[in-house]
Amino acid sequence: MTQTAQPTPATSVPERDDIDDRYKWNLSDIYDSWEEWDADVERCRELMDDFVEMRGTLSEGPEQVLSAYQLNDKVGMLAYKLYRFPMLSYDTDQRNNELLAKIQRIQNLFAEFGTKTAWFEPEMLSIDEGKMMGWIDETDELADYRFPIAEIYRQREHCLDEKGEELLSYYSRFNGQPAETYRALSTADVEFNTIELSDGESVEVSHAAYGKLLRTRREQEDRQKAFRALYEIYGEKRNTYASLYNGICQRDWARAQARNFDSTAQAALDSNNVPVSVLETLIETAAAGTEPLRRYHKLRKEVLELDTYDLYDTSIPLVDFDKEYDYDAVADTVIESVAPLGGSYQSQLEEALTGGWIDVYETKGKRSGAYSAGVYGVHPYMLLNYNGTLSHVFTLAHELGHTMHTLLANQTQPFATASYTIFVAEVASTLNEALLLDHMLDNTDDPTERAVLLQHAIDGIVGTFYMQSLFADYELRAHRMVEEGQPITAETLSELYYGRLEHYFGDALELDPLYEVTWARIPHFFNSPYYVYQYATCYASSAKIVREILDQEGDARDEAVERYLDLLRAGGSDHPMELLKDAGVDLSEESTVGAVVDQLDGLVGMLDEELKRLD
Image (tube, rainbow, N blue to C red):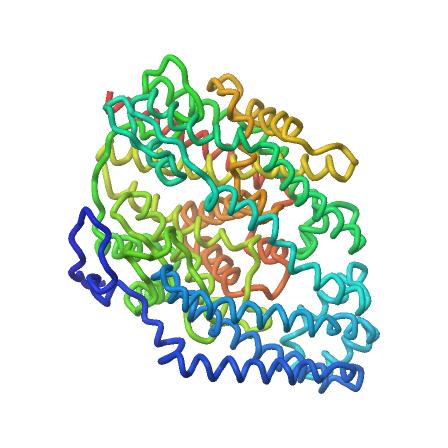
């Protein structure tokens, strides 16, 4: 990749026009104009109407079923473009309410379509399964839809009749209301506290400021002040948060019972055909493997020379490191790091970096954070807010993993089976990070940089594996309390969460009692129940795959690489557990999850050695 000029660091956030076009995504690959977009909105509406008119015709034969699925594909492919175009535009300037209105227009159109098509699955299930499979065997073009059709029959005991599905579709519009209320309570309506730091500076402790203070303030007193300033807000509103969370748990249990599931966990995991035992194995193995986690934090306490050590001390770097990583140089490094995956993977990753797929730098009005968003039939788009820190170096590799997964799946799979599930989504991203870590460690002997790299890797395991497992543990226990008719109050939730913290960290730190309200600060609990465990299972999966790739040679390595690339190419063509098994990962086995515990133990040992080199 050739070196190109990039903006010099500035104290103020630049305007979008100040950024070279090479660092901005090119949305004309989706639409050249809003007129084209408007025309496709009307075309999509017509296709939706055509689909609705097929009601009552599916039993006529395989041709009708095929026509229905092909028409649904046309709607779905248009939907990607129609939603992504305003969404991506809005995310580069969230001050533009006209773009927000266009997004809402599309969301309303899709919600209306969902209600009008509630008849589809019940009508499919009215056709004998044996007859349907015979039609698929006899009709070549229906083969692309074998898996999604088989899924309808697999889940038939949880599908209601047409009237029931229509009724649930009405209530689905309210499913997100607790999450919206949570966001309003935690952001729009919150008044953050202001603290005075040890150097006399006054700081309003917003969510962003809190994270920065914990990462940058060497004075423990400042970190403690920041922690209490933020968490006191949640503590004061704990009863309101508990009421919201009780509503979410009750909603999930009501929905599970309406669809004939035995538990909320079974209902949540069934869409991916994942046994609840996989979730339980993850939780039990992580909870039993906390010794390396505690060892790491005891090492941190020693290195930081703290008399007391609490959770608000866990983010501060162990060594000072202010190296700034040039974006173009980092892009070259990432391309080099994925060499074990082959030349084709490298060349396509380079195209992603140079083809107008990535919006790199922060600009005024731009959304924060990072993501990769697919557009079937076009290519993925990546949003970054690159700032030159090591964390953002790994963010680039992470999002490129998602982009390559989407790209390979879309290139290989028809639309019906291209979209992969969250259960495998983080495998490609964390594997890319692991390859980058290995590459960077191999190319530096600087003990400071090596210590920083190792701390980054360890913190990744702690945050992605251990903490997500702890969150999953809490969620499962809280939902089971509702299923058993137990009360959900601020006191019961605080006692539950604090107990899990004590189990995981043991005597490695002193827990401020205010940490008992942490459950109120985790957005995933309120936005997407039974979601976080998948971060941990994905991490365990990628850890196993990357070791097979890096630790083997010759044909064995080539076979491991090909199994992994086949996983990416497979998209959503089978259940994720089966796809992972084909790639050599069985998450039903305790050893797969337990390998992450061993990995952390090894990394902590390596970090200890590098810190000794630094005295």
